[in-house]
Image 1: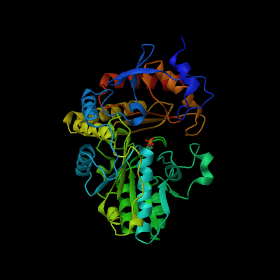
Image 2: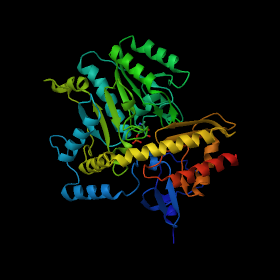
Image 3: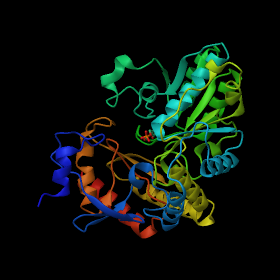
Image 4: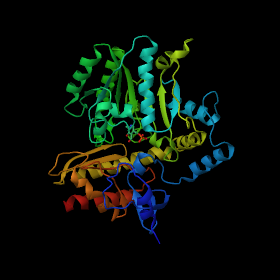
Length: 423
Ligand SMILES: Cc1ncc(COP(=O)(O)O)c(C=O)c1O
């Protein structure tokens, strides 16, 4: 009998996958809580929340119930000229959690939420008859795989092939420890010209760039500077949103708020694709006009999908229960304890922790990079120990669903230690 993996290799093209790799994908046949189960009966701890989308564990019964209830009422409806309660309620509840924000625009994934945010910002200036197209972004960022998102992301192996097609962006330094003044000065030099359309950033953690972390106070100062010079600020919370940094949103650490926020990934707790670009009233007002040409002509077929909204609403219900942030705090405390122990290891360059994320920058002969060859052996090493971890080059990280127990965390920490010892 032909295995599913072999059938897969004949017909499926997987994302971010080296096609000459000898390794066939593992066929997952079911998932429950913190575990994935393959078709051979092996179980694996999901140490990365299934590409950062899961929040409360797999197949959460409450979310299943809510999605099922919604599916019996209506699976989908067109969202231009029509609306429905799940989208309205989701917008109301999110806006309550995001002070200063005014309107919610729906799309289907992280890249589209970024694409929409950029278009909102560019057209804001165009509608005001003062067109601006300059964008500032951090070096080393990752905002998705569509053309706008690639343009603002770091220019690297992910988008080299498209370089001539990407629009120009001013990439400034990330304000990591010791780099704050330099980054601030670079931002100041650009925004003071009062001609920048927007500044986009991953708040406090650059995810795909290697879990690079920086302090909230400097981002707060950067947002103040943007406000002073009339530059729209966009927080890409696609990865950081929904508890990853220890608060509901990374911008909850700031007193100055961005003009636009992008959300996706854990928004539906990993149940359905959904993206949101949420803006304040200043942005929205630029579109309220008698001139029909100033309409925001953007929309996807699955925009506002009610089933996805019902998953997001169930997700928010679970966030509203005290146990969720208790778990987030507990995971953070465990990470901090392990950080102290592991940072002494000779094969560790750096260990970073924020919220439920712990990242290990591993020493190797090559520089810290996505294609660092150390990453080739890592996934198999952990799979053999019943753990799914997918490093970013020589940066290994744990970003678990919030229902993970201390016992499973210890299993992962032990395997990390063993990997470091094996080098
Ligand atoms: C910060 C950030 N923005 C945008 C995206 C793109 O999201 P998606 O993969 O859903 O298109 C990602 C994906 O990892 C991300 O980390």
